[in-house]
Length: 385
Ligand code: HMG
Image (cartoon, rainbow, N blue to C red; front, side, top):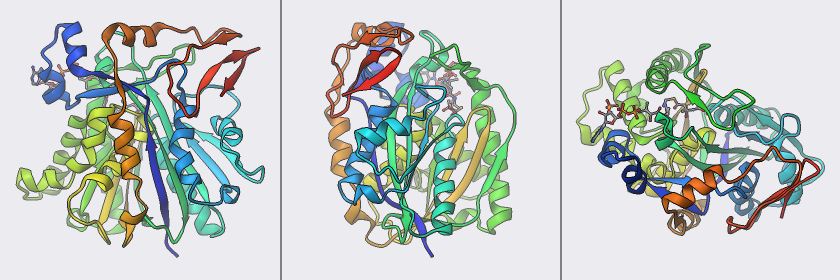
């Protein structure tokens, strides 16, 4: 039985900061961002946008196409948690009118948890083909001001419906994985921003790719040439390019740059103008490939490399299903990205510093243009409207 992604949709915030504005304010040559790390814009969440509102925006168009009462579980991957106990999915339960006969759980391991959720959901559907599972990956990437990571912020959410006989991609059995206890990126409980050893993190990412790839080939017997398109976790697009060239060197493939680029660049177009969305980033890349590649993808094999700092990595593949393009929501993705409002630097700083979320009572001014808003806190309870 085939199991995989039946529907997929992505959401981001209503605002972005241009890397040209960022570079001017910081007194840095903009080409460091355009060329050096490969980023043009980063989506910025206003204080009244959080992972719940982003996730609701990502998932609602999927629910409009099915009977939402049939969703049996929500696996919500995030490292931007809003509560230490209650899972973010339960807030969605009310906002999106899901069935009470539906399980909710939040998953965490840095950027890896979305891939973990996808693999878990696939296994659950294989065990019981009646299951219809929503996997959600949603994050807001936020670093300290003037840290190396500040240029690699962003935000986004991806919703994926995992079912038997999927219309978009079948997730293939077998994968390669790798874990190592390293301190390349982490966020202690008292902090709202991540700490990062930036250059070290890029080395750990590339080593994890090599290790997960070796395990993948041992487990599946598949080789580099069996894969038609490559999707990587994208903290910034240059990282994905480096990853692809590292893999090419590792397997000794003889490819012209243009041939190599054709297999990865369509999967970076959205990430270049959205920024890092941590657990969602790999799947934003997959959506970017689906929406932007010129050739048809029917029956093509796509690989996914998920990397979560700390670190856990996984390499796996899927087969794009014939007629997949009939159920893509490409127009909605493009519209959201295009309709974002550009921030000036002062407003970026206001969004960054504006609010102390540790207050028990708080009313937030409206910046988020909807359809779902985080409107404030009453007696330590988050209120959505
Ligand atoms: P940096 O110190 O700001 O930049 O750190 P740099 O000086 O290394 O320059 C970056 C590149 O731009 C270099 O190219 C420069 O040569 C080039 P490279 O040597 O890398 O090929 N450059 C220029 N190019 C053209 N014109 C110019 C110019 N100037 C410089 N004028 C760093 C970069 C990535 C470390 C920083 O952005 C950072 O700390 N980012 C956050 C950490 C990160 O994203 N790590 C990625 C791997 S870890 C990961 O992916 C997991 C993560 O998503 C979290 C999770 O799992 O939850 C982060």
